[in-house]
Image (cartoon, rainbow, N blue to C red):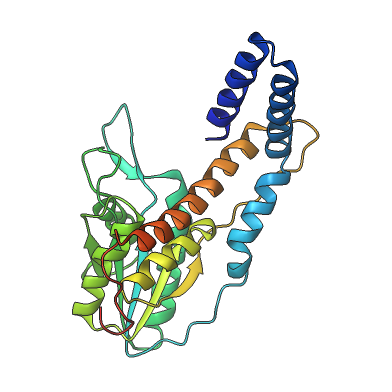
Length: 253
């Protein structure tokens, strides 16, 4: 996203320079350089990530109810070329570990505890995320009968939409939402739209790397952060235009 924006600015700047609008062209070249340095050296991603994640720095102490649901949002899968096996994606392991730890903490209270794994085959690897993650959770010692796979969702909006229906069937009185720290704000907005008000728990935390030279890592996480902001803005625009389904009140999912 950042690279595409920079290439577009450079193309426009070159075009303005070619038609003798040199002052405008130079201004756009300078703007491109400023964006590249500010993002690549860590200033922009550090600010964006702090705004997205600071609310979730400290993990909450969960007071488990009688009937609990831990919602694990998928983070992709990877197809291993030489074996054709499907494994959880790189960003999923923190979510799997956090969900397993929460489940074990919940079970120690003697309460009913379920993990709802939400994610379809968005990468078209041949197996949905929920099924792949279920296998990993079983390997981590989670009872298979306590795992509910939701295999149809292809994005965060559908995660919230389809999971809310399962939560309604399960009649969970305590819902915990597990995802990456950067992803929680948008996820909560979507889940609340469908009448679910979960306790958010971050599985991982991203931070920029301050550097005197631009780093590709900082550019990449700038893209990740902008993706989250765009998702939030899109939600509000769709609401204003009446394109989202009617909002469900909490407890009426």
